[in-house]
Image (tube, rainbow, N blue to C red):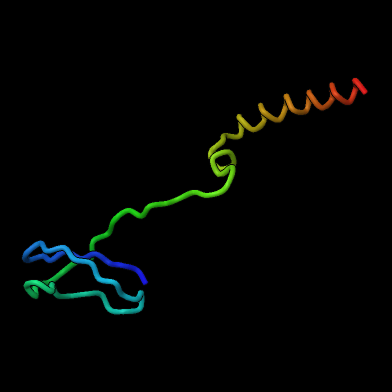
Length: 81
């Protein structure tokens, strides 16, 4: 269950509510009974696994330049045999 943060329009009291997604949002401040609004905050993202930075952020130019030397090296190795 997610935790939602609210702020009161009357007294600026900030509080968090641990509730289901399907529950109705809080409407009243527990301190002064004033009207509240939901506060939206950025969410932390964690990238796991090898290569997300290699596969998702390279330009097409970088990929073709890296592929050409590898092809040339493999041709040279094959002709040396």
